[in-house]
Image (tube, rainbow, N blue to C red; front, side, top):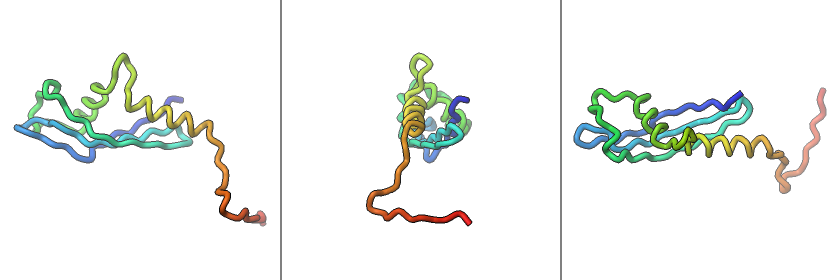
Length: 106
């Protein structure tokens, strides 16, 4: 099963009635592990032509996803995918400074 992504906007900036900046958060999960990232995207001006009053959250998120994708590879999603892959390989161990505690199953 492929990874699932959840995008959300944290903040948006507009100038002269057009969106110029978005602060976003993306969470990715592989149904076992979850990782997330956040970032700022500054629109170059030529990709946003919808007046601010008509813009919806999903529209802005779609713009960010499209603008950060080259050759069908999203730089944001690929970084999250790599983190999830590393978590799958990782072996969790206890902290060496904590004493091991035996807990019987009763």
